[in-house]
Image (cartoon, rainbow over all chains, first blue to last red; front, side, top):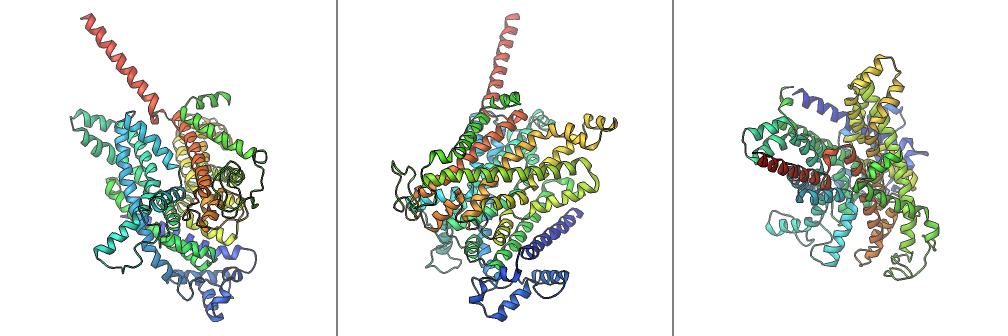
Length: 325
Length: 304
């Protein structure tokens, strides 16, 4: 169990680092940090609200370390201040409304891409040098180097604008009310089809290549030869002997890729005008809504750390050695 | 050095990648010669389809897309290589130091690296870029370089750790070679392929990320680069009004340089790790084996 404890401790430190970056950055900029951060707040916010907002970020006349603890206190009590662009809504409300869509988009596509990519990778490694491998693996390499931005714009243009098969914006038909009925769910799925496919497509190549290369390494190992020698079926050797071991480094690659998938999700949402964090951020950036921009770093870091913790648990399941440690 | 190149270029992937990269470098260098307009000047009517005069059409602002593409190539390549260099230098320094010296140095550096890996990149870059204001491409290169070294450090450290236990390193230590000499003369040459891999990968990553940040509106709107082209296209709804040519040029530019650099990278990887080869090499080996088996069998048949 000490493995999980150590990981959790590590995640707490990582979270503190992200929070400290938020605290230090405005103070490192030339000029008055309060003026920089709330430059656009003058017209929309009454002065007392502005003062309260400044206090949330630790801008009080005290020594720096006290300001720091004040800021940490706001972060740990889930107070990220109010959004300047969407005043008087709080940053947390604005972000939390958008977060489920981003998690839905990123989560669905990353799981899809990992499963499909890894399966294809196992197969490509098994038939190494065959027709499948020599077509799929180089294409995966090529796909891997195409950014989400380009794929999103291209699919939007072909299937959304050109062929008009799929909707070009929103997460569901605006005339529908959210609820657990078929009409609403089907509309959500229909609207998610293009962004999810885009995102999955971006990361599938990487998982395929990682799995293929790990698998090739495994196939040369003695336990795999042993499996063959025992007369086990190909499928059993492939999945229970080789793939299970090859999956461990793949999981590490998976954990490392989560950050870029989240980034990709932000971009995809903007292109498809999807109501996730990306879209909110795009508006926030244009309006220089600093509390919002800082808030998203905290929220995204938290999402990333939670996902990593989940992966740690999966790791324990996959690697029996960690259970004893 | 020449020999090194000729070995790498024998690999088809690497050669194709090299060709693409050289073509881009050519475009970037020859920018003033192959364009005749100012990339930021209105030279024709807005949203003109590609014609003989304006081969890639014009933007919403009536600027020539081809000219912007050519000058943008220059920006993107410089930013990509500059940030790639920063990433590689920091990553290699941290990775080698951690892997070679071990102990508390390794623990500290590894801890920092792991934290840098787990904090999501793009959200962090958004915060940095937002505070810096409208960052020009070089500022963007700097912040990407300073925040993206972790992956390279991790890989370099892992490789250094395996090399550290080899006999030739231990032998050098026993004859009392100073650490700097072991690192520079004994370790570095064996890390070259990983450092190269890291560098090229970082260049691709930077080019994509720079375009992304600028697309998000965090760049300097007056800079000419593929990212600002996409940003202007997005804000003028070029896609929804059907002006595909405004996004086609920067998109293709990013895709092709990405593929080119990746091909080069994986080509080099295959040269240094033959087990990863696809296509030709393995097929040839399999065929040769079959041929050998057959001739062996027929020889045996003839003998009995």
